[in-house]
Image (cartoon, rainbow, N blue to C red):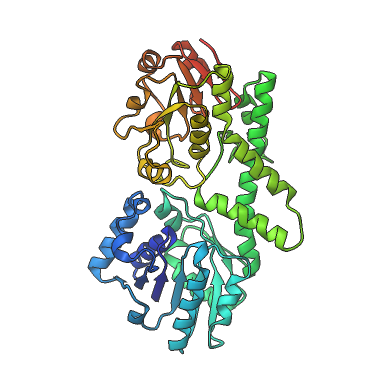
Length: 428
């Protein structure tokens, strides 16, 4: 099939790479805000090596052509839109341009997170009855985008047209062989489902964080509670891990958009408001534990932080807990020594050269030089099994604040360190 992909998001790069890899003839027109030459230098794309390799292979083979102007585009069978949420007008303008020059049948795939009802608005710009717009919500996960796209658990397809469904099945046939992965529903339902899924996941996380806080107050190890809850088949283990707050551009944005949809329909979103409030409150939990341990005497102290990205496998810090944590620590005159395998450039761009911040790009232990305590904020794999003897020698107060509950409290305490997690604790 002849495919045009428009956009400079991870979803656009992944779709271009995957669809070209299975024989489709693909033309990729990135958004002008991040043209092709800059796109391949983007930090977030460097975290997806398989996507990069396949893009380069497809360009060499001629299966993929990168263009920098819509004037270079011909007719297509599929137009795949993977744009940022604030590029809705660009999507409308692009579809209008394509529709003006194309008379043959066409399916426009909305793979962007736009307001509910936007796919119908895109279809209204098309010129012929054989030109249809469908929605295929972006379900990718940063750091493993290729795996998610090429080995999907499902395709959530918003589509009211049988012919368009057949086109979509043919488009994605190579990725739909192991099992029947298509779940078709009306377009608005698919758009709302995407937001509702993230709303439910966020609610589970926030509820578990509330339970962890209660466990702290009662002297209960929340890990026992988590395992007991997860063993109930009505609940399961997914997204039941307490922590120091979630972030990320997609998760946070989808929650806010879902809340906005509620308000726009005249319904107050008390539950989502609570979920968001709990999450923002939880981003300060490591600071509050530090405050409690030192009885509020924080000025002049030094704290090491491991991890700044909103999750492992990405360089992004959008709405990341580390930003809230840094502001709270600096307000008390605490010097922070920060290590992250990928996100330090983003931190530097966000906060600048702050006098109370030292970036330690080379080695996690460099961040612990002269520190009183260590805060684990992002659970990168290199942090999972540290040299506890070395940490005990380096940390002045021998205090470990585990924001992701990845360490065994009793094991850490047996190494002479004080352990404080989310709903977990142990002393030497």
